[in-house]
Image (cartoon, rainbow, N blue to C red; front, side, top):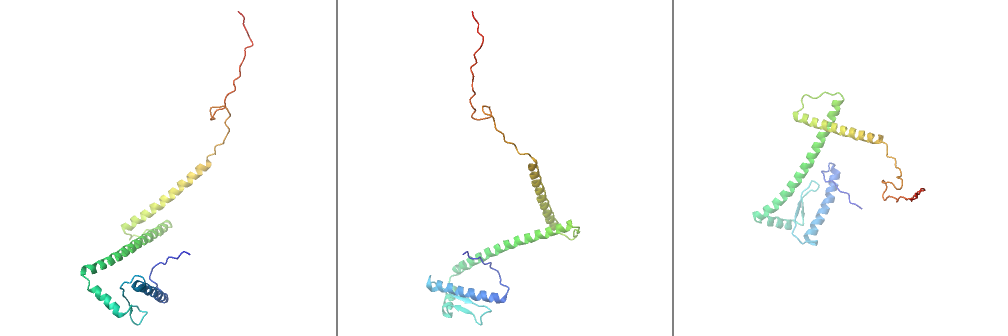
Length: 200
């Protein structure tokens, strides 16, 4: 069975958000235990503060978490900056990706807005006097693109009608022994004897 891809987005409903949080928190702590002792034996500490708990949660315990955070603070600045820089790069990549997706959505919405405005003009609505020259240019682009699509559709339809009016070629059989057939059938040669004879 194919696993359905979950779209990551903020959950508006508070009850659903609480249920999702508890489920994912449990899965997160399970993964943390696996990394900490079961599989990888790495030193790991987590600190979780949420409105769904009366007090903050620490994994695995306060003593281990304090020791882990203290070791990180005691690292040289270069080592700490490497980790922070790597995290910042990942965050910036995600931000850039989201911004690109938002830009695509803005362009599609703008295109839909100008398309609706074009239909309004066709129905007799007046052109707003307060339109910015850039918006007028975008509206002109949408109109020209729509006209091109209409012209292309008309040309394609006309071409189909012209082809439908051309009669189909009728097939016929080429006689044997002609130059139009390959290979050509041999001709039957008849020897003719003269009926007249002369004497000397």
